[in-house]
Structure formats: structure tokens, C-alpha cells
Image 1 (cartoon, rainbow, N blue to C red):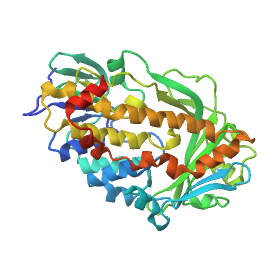
Image 2: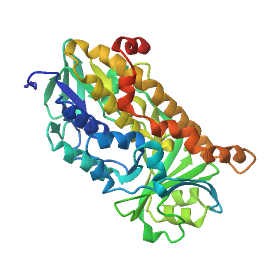
Image 3: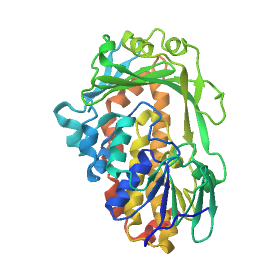
Image 4: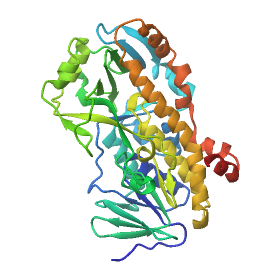
Length: 414
């Protein structure tokens, strides 16, 4: 059983080769810091359909030199539109690509891209350097001055810093917190990708749109370099209790998705009906954690703050985490790791909790029954740029430099 050794500098092990782990590895390499990425899958394949990248992430991807590759495979929506579930009425609309208004306001584009394409761009930029596939983490052992990672394939790796970018079902998080921190939201989703030419009733197919109705909503946006397909995410209330411990997929009867949207606008029923739904996705979050690290082990992305997807910020806040952590690691020695991790938590915990809370509140607003409360909700979605621009305008790299001396940030984390 040989353990890994590297040359001078910190030995950094990133657990998870998804969006967060790959972005972090690229950001570290840009800063002259080497890292090893350990991914349990034997090949890089993202679970899920697509991802919407907002300016708070795309500005960082531009800095990493990968944005051109991403935009070539993605679509920027024409507008953000909110619609009535039954008659399709436009309740509110905000320009995105039109006159480049989103980019002008927030300084970077908004992209809809297939998750597999995004991961290919990131892994291609990394070039396979330091990426180890087929490594499922089974144990972490704190050895005082290092941490030993044990993998199911028998390999051991001794590192100075462990970064858990292993998602909502994080093995690393169980080491950090000592328990199971995932919480079922009481909602679930049906999802799919449909070619635009199979959706004849869909108005504005190149827009990102929310169809809002009683106890459900449907979000969709175009993906691909020519916007040739539409990714949708159809969220419903229930089941009240999730039927499977340890799994976020549950089998469904063939008509369950269609029944959940019976009576909705034809564009919605066409879209949901275009996919043969065999499963629904349980929507889970991670409860707000008091500590993101234990010793020299720390969490990133969904492992630390998985949230409901209703602000579209899961991948985006993960990219923010990666940039923040990479920037803080510059010049840090082994003796300074724990103080640095205090700064990282101080910089990231409040913002991610605010977005988690906003995403939960948005679920309730999107699922209102017909009635007087709709007037307040409709005024709110009409003010989306004013009320939620703070999410998109955020600059993670600048936030690190603006935080001031390390001692002040550490004090904030206590």
C-alpha cells in the first residue's frame, strides 16, 4: 500500500471531478498550485440534463480562459419570462440577450449548456493532468500533519489539504460534520431535453421561462450552440415523505408527470409529454452547516450548501467557492491551512445561506394557487433585476481582495 508523494508545496487532494472540482483544479493551476482530483466515476459523465450559468460564474470562467469554449456550446436566452400556468399570459419579462442588456448590466453573459458539454470543456482545459478516475473515497484518516484518503480500488493518498467537492451525498462532509446533513424539501421534479421542433405550441422557445401554477412550476431554457433543444425542469409538491433513503431518484408510473400538469397550457403539456418519464428527482438541500471544515479538510459547493434550484445557483455558487478557495491558497503553507479555511468560511457562508433561503422562498412563490396573493407575487417577479441582481453582480475574486487582512476574516468566522 503505497501512499502518494509530491514535490515541494502543499499536497492537495480534491475529492470529486464535477464542475466544482474541475474549476478548482483549473483555478489552482492558474495560480501555480498543483492538485490531484479524485473522481469515483470511471469516466467523466455528469448526472442531470443542463445547467444555467449566470454572470457570477461566467466572469470567473472567462478569467480561467474557458468561457469561449463554453459559449460556443451554449445559448444565451433572449429574455427571462414568467407566465401563467393556464393561459400562458406573460406576467413579467426581462431582456437578457436582447441588446446585450444582461451582459451590460452584470458584465458577463448568461449561458444555457448541457452539463456534459460543460464538464468536457473544463476537463479538456485541465488536460487530464492530476485527474484520477475510478477513485471512490471510502475513508479519511486524520494523521495530524496530513490526512490519508483511502479509495475503494485500494489506493491510498496522503495529502496536506482535502477539499470535498463530492456533491450533496458527500463522503467528505460526513467526516467533517459527523452526521447526515441532507434534508428532503418536500418537492420533486421531472426533467428532460426536447428538440425545439417537437414543441410547436411553445412561445419564445429561445427564452428562459417560468410557468407558474398551483403546487407546481415548469422552468425551461434553450441549450446547444444553436439553441436547438430545450431543457426543462418541472417541479411539483410531494411526495410528503421521500421513499428512498440514500437515493434521490424514485420510480414513477408512466402517467405521473403528465397527470401533475393536467389542465396546464398546451406548451407545458407538450413539453412534459415529449419525454418518457420513468423517475422523479427528489429535491434535497444541505442544512446550514456551522462549520465547513475539520482540521485540514474542507467542503465546497453542494457538499457545503446544496440548495433548491429555483434561483439557478447551485453550479454558480460552486464556481464562486472554487475561485475563492484557490485565491486564498496562494502563498499558504501547511501551517497556515486552518487559518485560511476560517477565511474561506467567513467569505462564503453568509452569501450561500442567503441564496439557499431565497431559493426556498421562491419555491413557495412559484407554487401559489390562484387567488389574491398572486398580485404580490407578480409584482415581485416584475422586479427580478432589482431584487435579485445582487446574486448575478457578485464578483468572487474581488470579494477576496476586499475582505481585508486575514486576521479580520478569521475573527468573522468565529
